Image 1 (cartoon, rainbow, N blue to C red):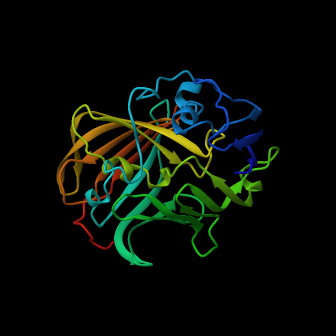
Image 2 (tube, rainbow, N blue to C red; image 1 turned 45 degrees about the vertical axis):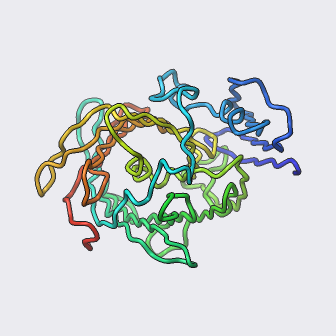
Length: 313
C-alpha cells in the first residue's frame, strides 16, 4: 500500500498525518507526537497505532476517565454497542451556558429525532438534530448509521436552506467527503471547504452521534469502556478521539412528565462530559448532558419535555 499523507491546518498548526502499511515498523509504545508538526504513524497493528493517539484530557494534565491501556477497545460490530437499544423518538433540549461566576445564558434549543428507515436495502437509523441558536442561523445535523451496530454511513451538517458544510461518507475504514478548515492565520469566518480522504487502521464510530453511542452500551453500575470515534471538527488536531466511558451512579432527572431514573455516565471526549441516560425504555435515551469546557464555562443540555417514542414535534 502506498504512503498516504494528509496535511491540514488547525488552530494555527500545520498538521501532517502519515498512514503507513501494517508491515511498517511501529514507533515505541507510548510515543506522543504533538506540536506545530504532528505525525501519527500507522504501525504494525491497531494496538500499537492506538498508543500514539493522545487523550485530549491527558494533554492538558487532566486524568482521563479510562486509561488507554486498562480496557479492551469496543469496535463496531463486536456486539457491545447495539442499535436495538435506541428506539425511535422525538425529544429536545434547551442549552444553557453557566459561567465561572454562575451567570446563566441560554444558548440554543435543540430538536432531536430518531427514526429507522430502509436505505439501499439496509436498515438505517437516521438521527436529525435541528439547532435553533439564540443568535445566528439555524442549522441541521443528520447522522445515518447502521441500525444494528451504529457504524457510521453518512454525516452531514448544514445551515438551513444551504448546502452542507460537512458531508462525510464512511465505508469501512475509509472516510471521504467535505469539511470546513480554518486557515492557519484566519478565524472561524475564514473557513474554506476541503475535500478529504482518510484511511483509518480499521472502522470506527462517529462521535457526532454523541450520547447515543453511550446509550447503546450495556450500562450498569461500574461499567467502563472505551472506543475510537471519528471527530469531524478535529478538536485536538486529529481526526480521532479515544472516548472513555464510566458509569458512576444513578440519579433521577426531572422532566415535564415527572422524574426519570438515569444512569450517570462520565465521558472523556476532549473535555469532560456527563450524560444522564434513561435506565428503562420507552423514550429518548439521553435525558441530560453537561460539558465542562476548557475556558471554565459549563454547557447544560436540559430536557424540554419527555415525549413518547416516535412522537413528532
